[in-house]
Each structure stands twice: as C-alpha cells, then as structure tokens.
Length: 173
Image (cartoon, rainbow, N blue to C red; front, top):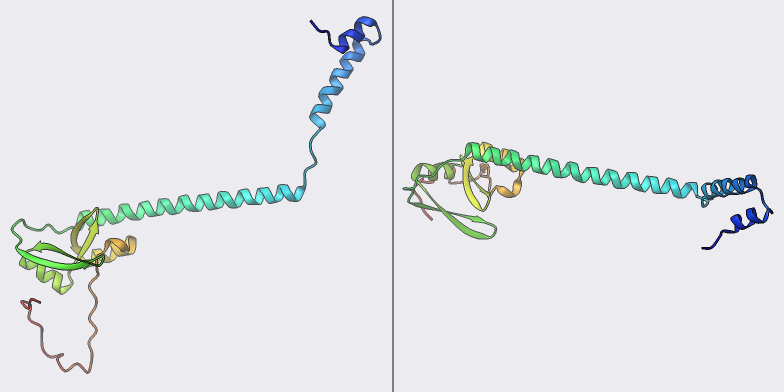
C-alpha cells in the first residue's frame, strides 16, 4: 500500500504533526477561496434575462387560465340557454358555416325566430345548437369562433322605394 508524501515526511522526522495539520487546513481554505472572476455586468444581465423569462412564463400561464375560463363560461351559457328542437321537426333550415352549406331540421316557430333574428346558431363540440341572440352576443364576446353568424341589424335606407312593403314570412328561396 502506498504511503502519502505527508506520512513519509512525518515518519522521516522532516515535518511535525502540527505542520501537517496546518498544511491540510491551508489546502481546505484555498479550495474554498478559488472562485473564478465574475463579471458583475454578466451577472446582472443573467438576472434580467431570468426575470424576463419568468415574466413571459407567468403571462402565458395567465392567458391559458383566462382562455380556459372563457371556454367554461361560454359552455355554461350555451348549455343553460339551448333551445331544444322537436323530433318531429320537418323544415330543412340551411345556413353557411366554414364555407359549406349546412342544414338542420327545425319546426315552424323556431324557423320564424331564426328569420326574425331572435335565435342564433352556435357550433360547439362538433354539433350545432340554437340559443337566443342576446346570449349569442355573450358567447361571441368569449368565443367568437363558436358563433356561426350573428343576425345583422337591418339599416333602413331612406331612398328605398320598397320600404313600405313587407317581405312575406312564408317566402322560400
């Protein structure tokens, strides 16, 4: 077994136990003191970068929470205000959604409400729902992509020669 240099010096009498202990202590102290030179500007830049990264991460988390809350609130509005359609509905109501013509079967009173703009079609969970238009405005504020089309407020033209004539409700295109 190899004997360390320190032990060999102690056995030879060239060094004392006190000198050996002092050498060990100095070696321990020098290990702790040897730190590389650190640039204060570099440290400050790293701290600034870390704070900015943390701020961005927190902002993303807050946006995700807000988005989840909006989706939840929109779902709740739709579920609590949806209009049920009778199984005996026999009128095919056609509308456009995502550049396609879609259709749903409705009965006469629901068709009347759709034409008058009292009901709005909502697309959620790969299914179409009918809700009152005032509630559809609330859903539109939370999740605009779910609203198929909000009824437009008709502006009256003062020069319209047919303004005095009503369009019949039973007119089918």
